[in-house]
Image 1 (cartoon, rainbow, N blue to C red):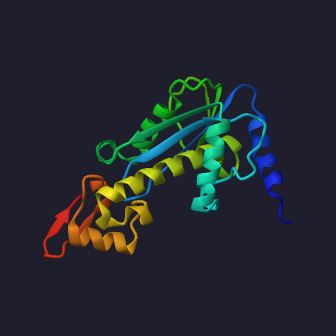
Image 2 (image 1 turned 135 degrees about the vertical axis):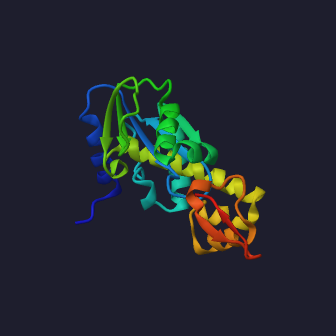
Length: 211
């Protein structure tokens, strides 16, 4: 039986309320793309009022995420954002870059419990609780997933204005067929992750090797 948005939000919040102490949720956006930053968010939400559409960001349309993002930002007790650049990702790898960005997002957040979507071993000043599919389990992580996703999507739209040939506003840096064709034609730009690209043949027949 399909549950209502209210029941869904209540179930997510019930998970968070089982912990004693201030709870922060943490998630990332952009671990898989060929271009752009990896962006993380650390969010502390009040128990009420509930935002009915807080859920795994992947389940929401872009327009819905934007609206819910504004609600989260207006109600959240604390929000931290962290980023790692493509250059940092290439230097230290995507997992370590994600951890670095998560530590940045959590810096100064007054929480005793950090619910983290799948990532472990951050060394935060509180109890770390990694949750597989945490954005579909915890209200705070779901809120963080939306903040991270909307923040990164906005960054990619800005990058699209600088590098319009790659279609970043549409593909958000992911390796779509059109994006890969643009890489073959133009080569990488400064916001591409060299370690993610691999072999591509440019239009003139030459090859560039990036990992």
